Amino acid sequence: MIYEVKITTPAKNDLRGIHRYIANEYNNPTAADRRVSLIHSKLKSLDSNPARFALAREDYLASKGVRTLTVKTQIAFYIIDENAKVVHVIRIMHGRRDWMNILKEEIDDLIEDFTTE
Image (cartoon, rainbow, N blue to C red):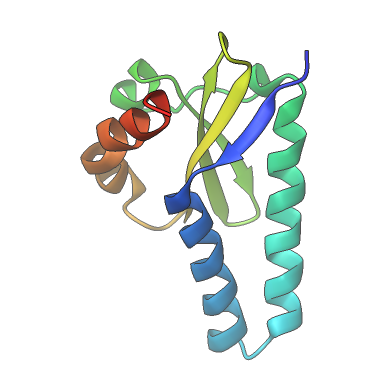
């Protein structure tokens, strides 16, 4: 089954931030381009069998249907809408960030944003 992969505005902002960080902190825009391209490629692969990646380990996020896809040091968080055959990528964050607390604060608003489309 083919799913449509939609990247939410917060996740797009995360990608821009990842690119900016790598390009500026490491003075390496080429590496930044490669990393963002790799992340895009992995996200696109969610169009086929997105449930192959596990639910988040944290009970609260798992109860919301949040799944994780790790790409190098970043973690993409996404939710599958089986009825619409859509994968919503909600955030992409570095694994060392306090992503659990960030997502706990944002998850209901993020879900509401794409369920009211």
